[in-house]
View 1 (cartoon, rainbow, N blue to C red):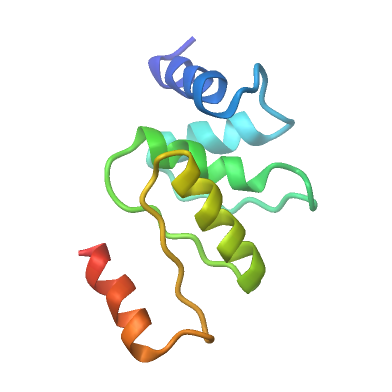
View 2 (view 1 turned 120 degrees about the horizontal axis):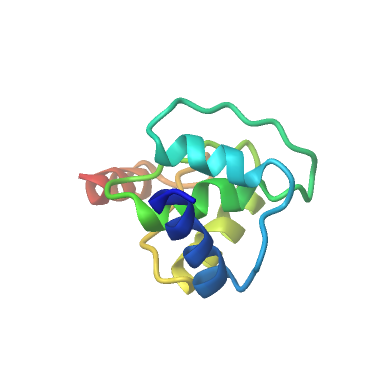
Length: 107
């Protein structure tokens, strides 16, 4: 078992409360942790969020997620902040000032 796999499994247990990954999640997360570009297509309820949330805890830097659903953005930001991550979203309902504030906090 690689060090990254141990780290991802430990993070899975300690922060998310799961003992095992869903099908495909571990391979996606391992690829992200290895620094490879990843394009993952999974069904609704397949555990896509974990595939970027877990590496965001392990890796330094900023994690950028693009989503077409404003309600999902809000849910994801709420979940991330509850877990102790700094998170924000930008969408079409925000003023230019609000979007600028998010961009300023990224740098």
